[in-house]
Length: 434
Image 1 (cartoon, rainbow, N blue to C red):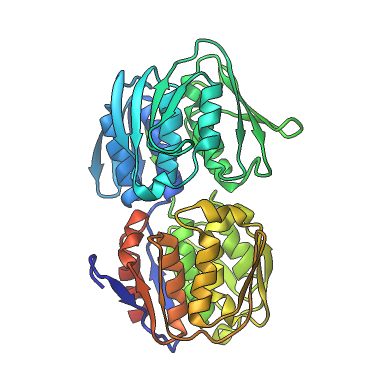
Image 2: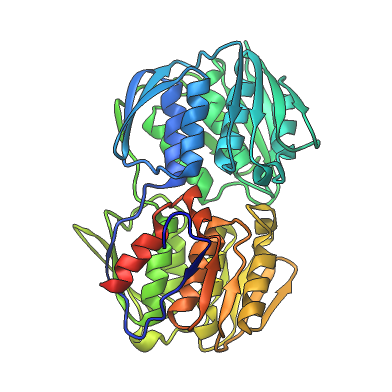
């Protein structure tokens, strides 16, 4: 497959998939480290960043805000400016949800007027709860087309006293992470009241870990559901060098290939103590399905059950829902119905991912029932099909797994993977070739 291919014909694989894979750095960690580095004083070197389309838009947006950088392979040197941005600027976040949410919050706490543009895909994704919280803080947010969506013009402020905001995270915990990441810009501190069912979560954990690496300590009161960022613990420091660990989300596709074929795949540089929530796809899904896990100095290895005979699972995936598509792709080969629960929020991501799963299973001739926020996929033998990726990188990568055990699976628009993993299909081909 070339970078401009209109389709990818998945190679049917009759033997176990074995080998070692290198995946990009974590997108979630990359964008958090980029933002925090930009508001430090002086230079910060980030090692091992992801260089997908989302990160490229983030870096370009920072350049438009006067933050200069120097790239060297997968490393980048950020010249931080202490959070001082121009009085007027325009940025384009592309299709990146993290960039859209994080930069909107950052600019709302910067005195000036800023236009935030985006792709058509991102313009359909909700921003209303974040905009409400930013208005609580005193910022102005004028939506240019549809209320609660980008593009928008943000009139930012730099609060002189302590500030407070309330944010609902049912749709996305990125709204909470956005406020936390921009909190060091408020000298007297911030408290964030969280409503909704997703008050903590793995991605918020990544945010707190990244903040801690820059010297910012956050307190969370579980009784009141309030996050406190208090002086002097909100003073950001320059760590000079920070490491971005490999992307567990990307690793999961290759681990699932091992599970499906009874093979053994090592992802270089990955450790079991990763802060990324998608580690739960390995521990809470693949291991109960019959896989085993080992770790060495070179990385972490998942070995599938003999002949890919997978056990059925019933799992709440609310906190690692990016892998709902991955589990759906291998679910037909389980020895019973696979239940994916509490993932209703994925309807409002790059595409309606619940409907995407239903459509993919229907095309393959596999029974798939959706009830509320839950999905149930029944055992079956998928048939040849063309997968409509809906321009969603995760649909393209996940559904390619079905083709390893089904002849005639074709992925349409595979180039949508450039969002986070431009070389995914090349890496898959290399692994399959051994």
